Length: 624
Image (cartoon, rainbow, N blue to C red):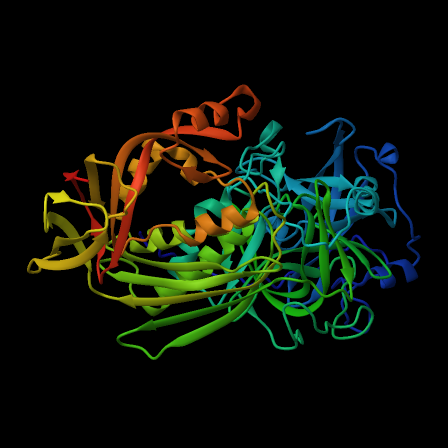
């Protein structure tokens, strides 16, 4: 894993605001020196209301509202170039506009401007949401008509119950399918959604670079940011947020707004601009955010630190401020939020310990959605290891913890990983377990909490199975067979581990095969011989399989005999008499009964201090 080092030069602008608003002075500010707001605009003779897209004509001039510095709403100029009909979807239109003014003349259409309201003749036309060209000679943007965005309210009311926190989102690139409108694929003339800056606060630079490519594929630009004081969130599943109409700097059209995916000791949020507000309802961004549909994540005020001009894509650098409500819907034409709501997220407790530093515990909340929850937890886990240890090299990581599910047994983490790929191995394990829990066909999971325990060392603790010794090559039913497993640790002396295997009284006379191996070796045999062992048939069986999954720091022994049998609802029924087998394998039971030709005679496990590799096959004789 390589840590990407980057240097940026911050350009501070001291330009004037747009003179497009006739009631404003040369500086673009009212006489009192305060920032312009829609209320001030309308009071200066600008009529309220919306402009229908059919009334938009090339050559029309207007202005947009956004924040370039702190929380002050500034203006920029727009001129209509034309209207592109049926863009991306039938009856989905985009207004093509030229953009100019301070900041944008130097930086172009800036990541974080998504949702900036655009006004012509004082009427709201829509939200600046797209940009044209990869390296345009002058800033050209695309405006999502306000009529399209107002349709989001109908979707919220009719398609599902917003804020239900059901894990319905399957974002492409994060474990889900591709979308019709892929931010990574420029459309005609390079048309693509304006990137959303993803503000990482409390994260190591190596963590940001580790996940940068995956985020950029979804139109999200990772940037280091921060949080400002003033938030009054009191809990993950309940608490208070800043008032809808009170508090500091309430949201209004043109304000910077953040949608928070992680909050607490770690913070991750996407920043855009408010397009429209009616009482406690908020519309923003003007294009999709995470492609989740129903959503339930915190909505926060944001403050812009500065703008970083870049030919490949300029970006606002922001800080997340007070939580003021919840984002409840992620739509093709923007996001919908409700002021005053409290988002329900998953509380996570992540502890870290090693031989050098005192143990540390991090507490944070993550959003709940298919694909995104495992990804976000992986980001936090990787960050904890990188921030407290090394970004590369040999190490051993022990993983523990549990997923607490409402109405179901806990799912447990208990494994060990070692070597230079240990960090990615931990990520795969955590991601795999959470993905199975969230995306299964048997139960709708509600995760009450998640705890993860990590212990890391800077040494490689691996061993290979070199040999296996049996106390006898002939056994009888009821015997206890002594087995010795010889392990060769990495750069260490050979050692032996003993296990005693009880031979069942039901074993048949004849040959038995014995496999002694690592978790990978034994699981590979099972998948080849009887893959049905790993196919859950209901919710309890799914959780049982997850909790009984094999781990890297154990040696496994399995003793097999040939014999006809079957599996019914995930349960093995070996050694069935021919008459019973004929009934079970009839046409009437076809599908619920799966025949198998292998019978497991005995199993045994020993735990070691090493991540084990290798296998050994042997043959014994059973006498009766």
